[in-house]
Image 1: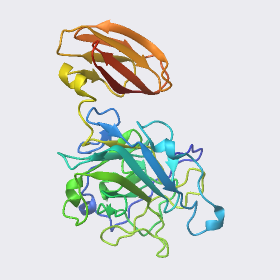
Image 2 (image 1 turned 135 degrees about the vertical axis):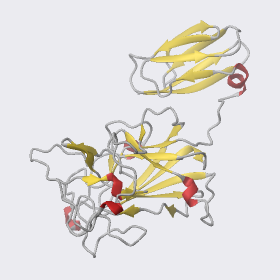
Image 3 (image 1 turned 45 degrees about the vertical axis):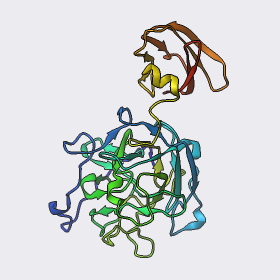
Length: 334
């Protein structure tokens, strides 16, 4: 829940029980040793394409207050932007993808929230957390083993900051624009889960209350302390995006693209799209919007650039034609 504050932020002091011995996980963005992944990282191959959700509560201990209202399913799709889906206490969102995710080298996907750093101490940040679960059949979900070594004796509120070094395997650990990575290798021994065919990711908002009646707990049965209550339209975990690093997405759109050894980059794009082919044969390109309207077209050999700087953010189609066959590429403008 990203909120403008007119009051001074109060940094909640860690209790003596939270010693340096517990600070065992990667730190916040910009601190050496963090493992956050920026949204522009070219390792991302795909983004969530579908979302269903059920909102939780503004305050799980006072349900008549209602539920948060910020965002829609579309807010969680595609490349991260300013739009978010607020889940509320114990809210749930399920993401789907055009292509399954597989267990490859390093992290396999990353989740983006809209936390922000303490302006007076960049090692600390305002964070809202969520459990992360995956499924290879859409019915049976397996949770990443989460750890929270944040003190659980004094309630964190909406004017407090948290230390990322005390948090592991919880979405929302990093500030806006940076994804929290997850590695399917950790779940490879789960019976019934095919880590090379992940089709669904489920996020469950952490209820940050330290009251025994409502507290969420980590793998060690410790209470997970995060901002509570959040009685705002944007209460709870704010889902921004889910990016995939290891995707089963085909490397070529069709045979023509493969034969041409076609490369197009960057994708997503902000201004100039580069097209490169190994073949020297003459080619024609045509850029169209989702409605099929032609934006621009031209001829080229080996290399050309397409200026998309003035176009509205969204999805476009780029058709490549050699006079015999056609290849259609999806290009995301941000």
